[in-house]
Image 1 (tube, one colour):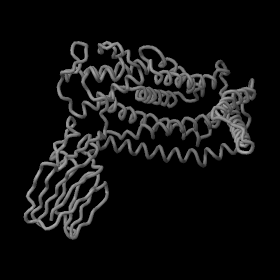
Image 2 (cartoon, rainbow, N blue to C red; image 1 turned 90 degrees about the horizontal axis):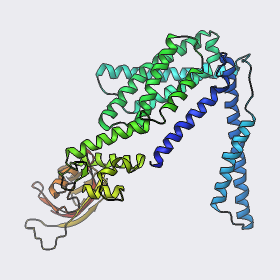
Image 3 (cartoon, rainbow, N blue to C red; image 1 turned 180 degrees about the vertical axis):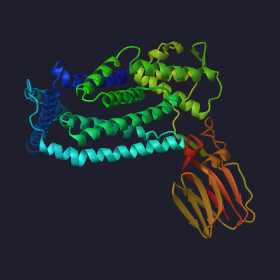
Image 4 (cartoon, rainbow, N blue to C red; image 1 turned 60 degrees about the vertical axis):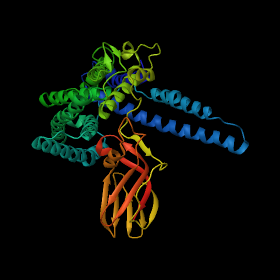
Length: 464
């Protein structure tokens, strides 16, 4: 397996263990007051340890820099790295753990500054933000449009900040403070509605591009937000530790096994890749085939993205049986499949067709001027103005537009395609009023979907 998969699993285990530490000491304790006080204490201790570690690390860095600057003592970059590692991974954990309380009694009085902060600042901001998202969700449903991909990030932010706020005000909710209890009900209801919206957004991405680890997490978190919201709405006064406990269990059970993010994403992306390769005869009877159909740009781009994802996140094993060469590496995959290694959304193209051996009729023209245009530049020649935008070439005569050609039109005139993007021919363009001729001898740009085609340079001559 590739390191990326190990990193993802490490992140899952990292989150699970930290969640476990938050409720483990009070697993059998039904008093949420002691659990809240314990977590407040270790959170403040973590912030204090981070401050101490930052000051210590910065001070040692200054001392090491002084030795080098004042006395000329050589201090390598590794020395700074080792210093950081010792401070961050030795000093910080020791300082933090020495301050972890053995036990805590229930909170006697809720901190007044925290009360003011939550009631006057945090809760109103969350309420406004949540209202904006809910109104957007209602608009999406009313207009029958798909939600934008940005909604996933916004709903996740709303849920994380809202959940932390619920944890902060839990003692006030349990003490029947009406303002805070009403907020918690509003939050859970909004969270359920927005999580459904997030599921709709990720469903569209998944239907088009399959399941990856990140999309798997979004689906999982959306489902968890809906269930936890429903549970707290239906059953009031539930224990606070249900939130970290359920998240911890969910994270652990999805780290390994056929239902894990790693396994589900691999099956989804490999199935999608196999379907495309088979459809275009790149994969025949379980082996890569060089004599296949010509692939449209979008299909080639999808194949390239899928291969890159599988090799980066799952290694060569999932597609090893398709390759006959023993190396099984990604480059060999492209060789045996007779595919370019990289399709990108901005694939480079150029044409450079010298005039040697060519002739054109110049009768009727009085002047000749050469030009070399870059994006968003112009060249003024007498009464003419040549302007190159990223998406088109325009010529004005006395500020009147007399010729406009888009990047896509110029590519077609030059004969540039995905297969012949380095062997285009020069282009002749004529205008009757005023009479002029444009000879484009070389150019370059980026090609992809038609709307993404763009020009980077254009060279030629104008007869007028």
